[in-house]
Amino acid sequence: MANCSSISFVSGDDLEVLQGPKVAVIDVRDEERDSDGHIAGSMHFASESFEEKLPELLQEISGKEAVVFHCAKSQVRGPTCARILCDHLNTAVSEGIMDKVPKVVVLERGFNGWAMAGRPVCSCAGTVCNKT
Image (cartoon, rainbow, N blue to C red; front, side, top):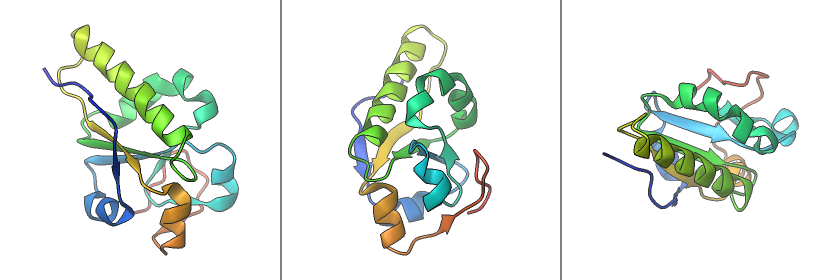
């Protein structure tokens, strides 16, 4: 039986290597995603409504090996939402609903650091970005 332990951080360089079908990038910024763009291929689950959207998020991350959270700087909202998901996954494991959970990490320096490094940013309006 696996569980979600402590939250760790991943660098932008490492995320670029990891990105693919087995990794979900979760953007928990609120309204700034609409004006600033987002990491190509990410999903939007705003921090202000994060807990009520957990069932939808669980469907989106089913079968993923890792879930990477971020907000603008990954100092408050990203780590907070990562811990909420971790707690939820641990409860699901203890209740026998799940037996394997993805690794949950937070992107160092958040979206701002990602964009300032010149990494791929998208401006599509979808909750789930299909660009990579």
